[in-house]
Length: 320
Image (tube, rainbow, N blue to C red; front, side, top):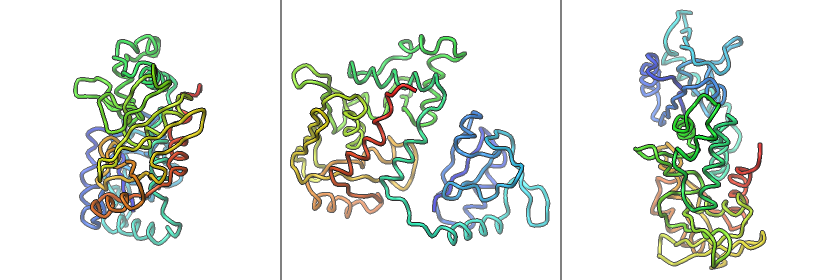
């Protein structure tokens, strides 16, 4: 069961919605701040606040505006206009959703794929800035500073800083407290346990990936050979993954990957990147999962991990 409430800044009807949900369920309720019409349409907000249960709005009615930033009002059982559905209405919606959902839950890998897909910028200028950031990491090993992106922003009516803030809001990148680019998935501006050499072993570019899956995606995204140097967090043993001319080799050969996320939710950098790691074998991965029961996830074979990485990152630098 996934509960998420979409809302605009300072929405007066958000607190009663959250309080009523807290009164009837222990399921964590995520909130998502929506500030643009494009994001309202992307995430399915028909006015603020909008409750999504497993991604679906249970209170949608014919004629509701699609992708609206307006204040949303509801009708209770007696037909009165209210700021949020009643406790009984919310309980019924959740019960109905549980009964109707007879399909198998998506795997953690599929959840991650859907998550990152929703984080891709739709606006052409935002997408151009995003790609410029990724290319800077791939070519120089470093993130650009905002002034490097002003030429792309020119003519859009927004500054580079504003565009970076928009990318941060959808979790395409993460900004530091002073507005510098700290993360542009798959890249990290600071060292991690996943170092990747892009290009030739002697004169390539060294970068750091946010997680093991991100590291695997760099070859697919850039089209270049890569050497991943990682470590098994249970033993400290090194793991390398080499991609040459599209062929990937893992050392040790029995190494696997783990995909999972902390149940608390939040940006990828905070709730899942630290848990997407390589392990020397299935036994090591199972040992880690048993000691981290709060991190539900899935152990992937090398082929499964490579396929997921291609789906997540292989298209990011294609021209739209």
